Length: 136
Image (cartoon, rainbow, N blue to C red; front, side, top):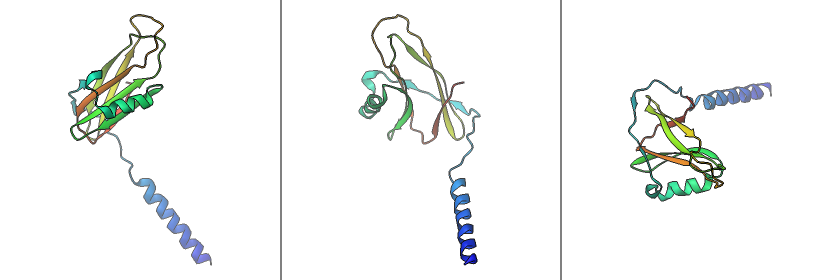
């Protein structure tokens, strides 16, 4: 009986160790190169990306979407009380195992009573690397 319990505990420990070590990868932050990008106009946004924005626009969000040619980096700043906000891309670069992006959300140029939901859609060549959203 004791042998069975010890064997079971040993198997459980091995399973925990094996499954907890899978998928852990250190993110390399060392910049290899800047990435060419395009800020997509509302008219050029693919339907799939429009759907993502529509589902999430009420709150802040950061998400990516890829098709066979491009990766879209989509950042929304949620419901805002005024209009005239702008969003700029401050950093967009690639490391050996990730893509890093940082945007800046700038206050409205003109205060009005119209509610807005500012979003930026950034298009880059397709990449299967993880996108890391940074604050610095």
